[in-house]
Image 1 (spheres, helix red, strand yellow):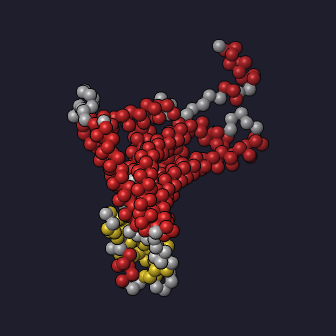
Image 2 (cartoon, helix red, strand yellow):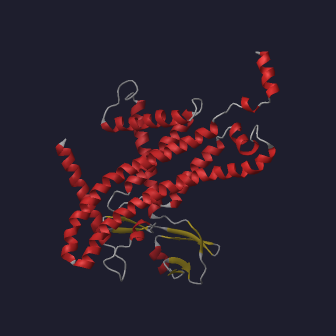
Image 3 (cartoon, one colour):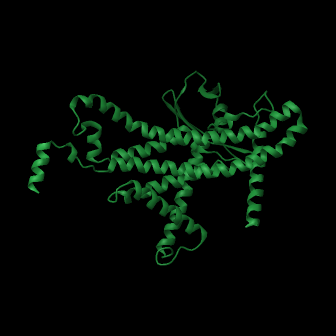
Length: 350
């Protein structure tokens, strides 16, 4: 046990120190040694690994035409485009109206989908062979997979979606949990990126939950949005806009919560490592480098916290998705909306 803890601490120190070297390798032009904090968390046109930048294809539409280039440099070399304030525009001033380029965040989203798919297919193949069905699960990986799957199915899906409908939503809930977990954990890699620190990514995930929720909404769900059984017609003038707004505030909250938590975590780590450069700039290189021991150790502790938060945020997103879906598919009883005469008649019939 002590050996395992020691190895984990050494690994965390190595990752933190490697992260420090990564951030130190790309300072802001003309403002060394200050770190460009936001430059480390925004989307990029390149994929970075081991301090090597691999520039990605650019695909966009400008002036009614589609353009495809192997990377930004190729677009600039073509003579048809130039950079203005960091953005590509045509040399005649025509802006890009639709950008379908492959970016670093998009690439990590694909990685998250691929990892979740591969692990699920692998586990499925094991179950088809009887491992985990006719016998107990074998191996750490399969046991870990089953723990997560059973937890999502029993503690989230069954808990918040009625028994008649929960089963068909388990695949989505488990998939979104696995994918978000991977996207969050990728940000712990020295050159990795948390794609969930991008609002477009979290908004897309929340949008998927929104459409699944509304398309599976019961008749009762829509009645409570537009009809409000038992409510005076004049009150519907106020309640209907509020309910319609509520349909959109739920996915909005999902997107913002995940985005803000992952972005703040990444910025915090970069800022703490940036203290090395601030101390070096104020007190000299020797003190700055010496203080690095403290900041790297603190960053190592934050990595443990960030790994926990990565899984926690995936859990919260999945939990709230299940809650919203469960509220939409649930059928309510409206006996309390019937008139007293109707209730008396029903009671007499019994």
